[in-house]
Amino acid sequence: MGKNITAVAIIVLAIVLVLMIGSYYRSRLGLETPSGSVSTTPEGINLPEGFKMSVFAEDLIAPRVLAFDPNGVLLTSITSTGEIVALPSENPDDPVAEKTVILASGLNKPHGLAFYCKDSCKLYVAETDSVSVFDYDAVNLKLSNKQKIIDLPGGGQHFTRTLLVLPSDSGDRLLVALGSDCNVCDESDWRRASILSADMDGKDLKTFASGLRNSVFMALEPQSGKVFATENGRDLLGDDIPPDEINIIEEGKNYGWPICYGKNIHDTDFDKNVYIADPCRDKIASHIDIQAHSAPLGLAFIPDNWPSEYRNDLFVSLHGSWNRSVPTGYKVTRFSLDAGGLYSGSKPEQVDFITGWLDADGKVSGRPTGIAFDPYGNMFVADDRAGVIYKIVPHSDR
Image 1 (cartoon, rainbow, N blue to C red):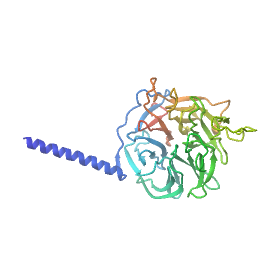
Image 2 (cartoon, rainbow, N blue to C red):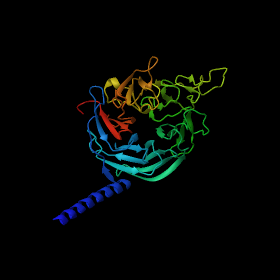
Image 3 (cartoon, one colour):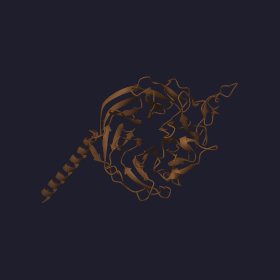
Image 4 (cartoon, rainbow, N blue to C red):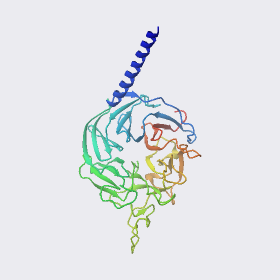
C-alpha cells in the first residue's frame, strides 16, 4: 500500500514538473500561454458615475506602452523583461485577454511601439540604444526579420525611448523621443533631451524639437494633427517647482531645458549666467502645467463615441512622485480642451478620472503608464506596479 502511494506521488510530481517546464518553454518560444484570471474593479479605485472598469490582463510584471495592431489586438512593451507581448481577445463587445503571446524577447529595455501598415505591416520598436523594425504577421501574431534602422545613445538617467508616426504629404516621418542623461545638465550628445525625426527607413535622422528633459509619451491630436507630449520636470527644487508639462511639439522649436521650464521661467538654480535679455524669451512655453513631481506618462485624446461632455478632452496618466514630501499623482486625470487641443483662459479645467491607487495613508497599489483606445471606444490603461492592464468603458451596461 505504501509503495503504491509513493508511486502515485512521484507520478503526480512528474506531471506538475512537466507542465511547469512546458509552460516556461512555450512562453520563451512565443507560444500562447494563459493570461491569468480576470477580476473586477480593484477595491478602492474610484471612477465617475456611469463608467465600468475591469482587469483586461494581468501577470504582466510591468507593462508600459500600449498599441493596437490592424486587427484590434492589443500589444504592450515589457521594458523590465525585454519583451513585447500581444494580448488577443475574441470578443470585441466585452474584450478580455484570453492569452498572452510573447512576440519578442531578449530586447534591450524596449519601450516605444508604432505600427506602420501600407503594402505590408511593420512594427517599430524603440529599445534604449536603437530603433528596429519588424515584419508583423497580424493573422498569426508573429514578428520576424528584425532590422535595426537607428542607433541611439543607450541608458542614462532616462532610458526609455518612445515612437510616433507623423503623417505628412511630403513623406511620413518617425518621431523618436529621448530623455536626458541627467537631472539637469548641458548634454554632450545632440540626440538626448530631444525628439528626433527620421524617414520610415531610419535615414535622415535629425532633431525635430529640442530642450525637452524627458518627453516620455507622445500622441497626435486628432483634429489638428499636432504632436502632444508629456514632459517630466527636473528634481531637487522643492515640492512644487518646476511644473511637469504637456507640450505641443513643433518642428525646429526649443522648449527651454535645461535653463528654462514651465511658462518660460528661468532656472537660476542651474544657470548662473547673467544675461542682458531674458534667456527664455525665445523658447517655447509649456502648453499645460501640471503639479510638480506628478510624472505624467501616457496620454490619449478621447474618441467621439464617448459621452459628448468628454469631446476634445485629453486623458493623462500621472505615474506618481518619488521625491515629494506629500506624494502626488498615481491617477488618470482629464483636461478639458477645445477643438484642436486648445483652451480658453489661463489653464484648462483638470478633473481626476481614475483615483484610488494612492490611499489616505500614502500606500500605493498602482502606477498608471500607457493609455490607448480600441476602435469600439474601450479605454485601456497599463499599470506597471500591479502588472495589469485595465479596461474602462463609458457606460455601465456595456
